[in-house]
Figure: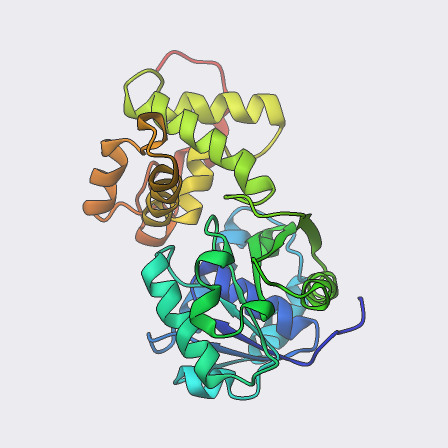
Length: 303
């Protein structure tokens, strides 16, 4: 494993990605703290991730026998102050809401050491839209993870409008040190590297489903046949969380104002009903036994 460019990491938000980022940091030997306003959030998310990967027979990025040690290396603390007071790198991993992220960046800038790097794990929003709130735009980054524990260990890294070259370099070194591949974005673009491609897939499959052209199951089947992947776009969206998917798609729509970029109303109605995907037990599929995991899902048949 690569040498560590720093020693102390804080993660803000113990959801699916925040918990995984903290696990990776602890496993790599970093002193790791995580803050979430919900008591026990990290433990609960850890259990859900464990159960999900076990059910799918996944060989995770962190070997199973090291999970308990990695979990013990993550300290969930009771306040942002406690999480960041001596941090050298902070990764914000909260909901995809620009107002909330700016509020948190302001608090992080006020409460962390002045030389601390502040990064966002946002799936789509450039850090330039929140860097000013931190009071240190030269030390801000986008560091966006996918599903690292499942083996999708690539990470987008992008600077803001004033990010120092040495800050970007430290971010790249840190990503490598947690056994992930840095996808270096040379200049600002909404969606970064792979997520820009993934966004096009989401937009088109959601459009076809939301407007009654194609059943979501067939889109997933087509994707799996063509790519050889075990999950299609709708199964992946369930994993991310349909509320998060909706928020991300609205970021793109608000940027372009193009009608084709607006997510379908049917997706919004699912979110309002609480059908959020894996985390709520129902999204496009029903969990913990989703249809796409059954042996006959990919068998030729007439529905």
